[in-house]
Structures are given as structure tokens and as C-alpha cells.
Amino acid sequence: MDRRSFLKTSLAAGIAGSGLITSAVSGESKNLESGSKPNIIFMLVDDLGWDEPGCYGGRTKMKTPNIDRLASQGVRFTHATGCAFCSPARAALMSGRYGFRTGINANICDPGGIGREFKDDEILVSQTMQNIGYKTGLFGKLHLHWNSAQLPDLPQNMGFDYSFHYAGLPYDKTINGKERRLGQAGGGMVYDHYNVPWYENGKSYTDDRYDTEVMTDKAIEFLNSKSDKPFMMWMPYFAIHEPFKAPKEWVDKYPVTEEMRADFAENVRKARIRGKRLGRAGLANWNPPIEQYRNRLAMGSCLDANIGRLLEVLDKKGLAENTVVILTSDNGPHPYAGGGKGEACDAGIRVPLIIRWPERIKPGTVSDALVENVDIYPTMVEITGGKMPDSLKFDGRSLLPVIEGKTPENWRKYSFNGIKGSLALMDKDWFYTAWAQRDDDERIWSRVTPPDSVQEPVPMDLVPQDVLKRFRAEMAGYRAQWQSCMSQHRKELQQRRQENKDFYGDRYKEIHGVRR
Image (cartoon, rainbow, N blue to C red):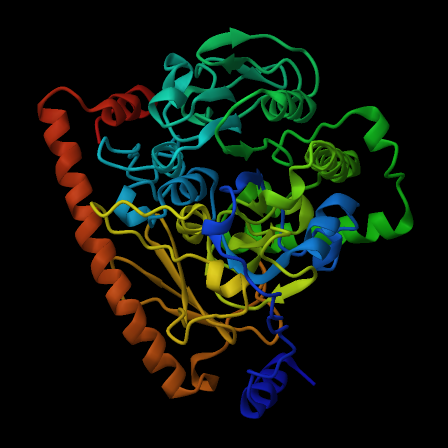
């Protein structure tokens, strides 16, 4: 049966019964008032695909026993979304707000976006947790400011009592022995996973060991430090972002096999198709070495082992029962892993999301609720019994009723995502994309099989008209909000330029020789 006939048959049969897992019901909930406030550890993996961990199917054969154990002890979400790039995902997680509200709708270092950093009136999750009475710690990759190595004390202003982070190198550094042009450097990029220039509470810290292990060591020190407050640990790992380099002992665990060669060849095939479609010659003619693929898998397993180290400390200290552990990814994976990072598709924005809380979540729970990364902030706040700030419009909703098997009837029917001017809406059956500034290019994919980075959209004449009608109506509201908010951001940037405070415009001129 050809693709068109398959789609026609599938659509006629209806998609709702396409095998999506429904949520299980957790055990009896306990009253927050009856015990101490729970600790929280939030772990963000960089570029981990939703279907890569073993508990999600293990498509790339990456060994993730500790992540799998977390899922078996808590709730695993099957329809969670992040963002297509690093900075917007981090901004959404920390603010609980969409990119059109914060203005961070592209990587901070990417001139294709508006270039906004957090405004002074943004209230971040770390600040709210401090106000609730938590000791807060940051470990890893911020990627929320231009070359913020110039601002080593930045985390303290963002609500972190303790910070061990890498904020970004100056733009004239080199990578792979070649000078990296100003416009290529990222405010959160790491050029080598060894010898990372760390900052500890604003002071330079040198350690030549592998970054995943170094930051986990610092996190364990934080766990072992004495405090009369509950803690919240924000842990955005560098792994498994390029450059792909892992300790040899982990690479050795992934010998090159015929199965690995076949998997890698398929990923390269998809990357080339994607490159041709996007007009990216480098990707269209891609011919990477399989050693890079081995190293990426090894990076994932090394990270998994360090997650295991943290979980072991919680067990030894008797903290596991009253500590909420949240693990997710910022976006989909690199093309090495057959990913669609940077695009609005399942392979670009769908992410794993696991939450373990022995006191409140029944082990082995699975939920197919539509959840978004902006939900993490209000979830943390409700878990603590605190209140969200009332001075801002937040887009996230607490997942606490969902993980307790009490999903509200008015829970979202669509997940929204936006990157630069590309907007996307998803439900469990369809994946719809359109543009913020025009309405002449819309596309829709069936989720009979999850739309990846190369799957063609469904021909419009095969899409039921009632489906198109409801997606268009829903998208109209998001498009209007996007246009209004982004227009205001641009006005503010213009005002800053007139006041000689246009930091982004200065950087753009430095890169391109012109003001924007």
C-alpha cells in the first residue's frame, strides 16, 4: 500500500485509537501540610530525544538504566514538549512563560531571533522558590545571556544561593583548532567537555575532568551541605550536546556492530533528506564518522551513571522519599541520532519527562496528557504549597493533579510551541504548523506514526475539514498573541537603542557590520 492510500485508510478509520498509552492512577495522595516541604532536583538533559531512553523504547540503543529506574518509580509522560532550541527551552522552564512573552524565542546567540534576554520584571522559578523558603542551587549550563562570562555573578541575581555554572566563553575562542567567528559562538556553547571554564559563586574554578562528572560532584557536595531549609537543585547538564566526546571507558562500552552501523546509516540518510529540504548543503552532503555516534551514546550512558550517583546519595541520606526528582530534555536530538532539533516536529520538540516522588506518585505510572515545559514551574510551586506570583501572565499549569490521576476536565486539548516565527499546535492525533506573520503556508501531519524530521505532511485534501477548522481557529489566538507581544518587544528594543542601551544591537553590529 502506498503512503497516500495508507493515510487515506488510517484517517478514515480514525486516529484516536492509535495505541497511545493512557495514564495510570496514582496511589492515595497525602496532605502537604502534614509533613515537611519536599526537596526538588530538576535535571535537564541537552538534546536527548524522547524515544532514546530505554523506558521510551530505546531507539538509539543508548543504555540508560538509572533513567529507566526513575521512570519505573514514578510517572513517565508520553506527550511532553520542550522547545526546538536550547535558549528558548531554558527560558520557558525558568519563567513558566512562552517565548513570545519573554522575548526569548530563539537562541540568545542567534541573530535570527529578536535577541532578547530576560527583562528585569521577569520572575524566575529560582526566585519564587527562594521566596517560598528554599535553598537554591544551580549546576551546569545557563545559555540565557550573551557571553555572560562577563557576568560571573549572574546566577545570584537570578535567584540562586549557590551556583556552579558555565555561562559562556568570549567570542574569539577556537574550536577543533580553528578560530570560531564572532557570530558562530554561543552564549552557552561548550567547546570541549574537559577543561571547562567554570564559575563557582562568581569566582573562576578550574577542573580538567569531564564536565558531567565535575558538576555532579558539586551537586553531591551541595546535597551533603548542612541547611535548615529544603533545597531546590537546578541541573542543566551539557550532555549530550556536541562536541561528541566521552571518557574512553564509556566509549568502549559501545563497540561498533552491524546493528550500530545500520542505525547510524539510517540517521545519516534522514539528515541528508532534511538538509536537502532545508537547503543546507552541509547537511545534505553529510558524511560523519561513526566514532561521533559512539561518543554520543557513551555521553548518554556516562550521564545516566552520574544521575545514578545522585540517586544513591539521596538513598543513603534518607532523602529519597521526600525528594521530587524531575528529568526532561530541552529539545530533540542532533541529526547524528536521527533528530530534528531546530524544527517543529516530534523529532525536534517532543521530549522525555519523568517525575519521581515516592510520597505522592505511584510507581510505574504512565500519562498521555499533553504537557509542556512551561508546566514545570507551577508544578514545583504547588508541590511546595506555595503560590505563583500574580504580577505576570503564566502559561504553564501544575502537573500535580495529572500525576495523581485527577486530570482536570478542562486540561489543555492542544500543546503549543513557537520558535522564531514558526508556530506549532499538537493534539494526540495531529501535528499542525503555521507562521506567525503570514497564513499562506500551513502543514499538518498525522500522528498515526509520530512525525519525525523527514516525514511528509498529509495532503490537505485528505485532512478532514473539521480538523483543519479547529486547528486554524486555535492557532489564530496564538498568532494574535505572538504578534502583539513581539511587536512590543521590538518597540522596547528600539527605545533601548535610542537610550544607547541596546546590548543586542551592538552584538549584531559586531557580528554583521550593520545595526538591526
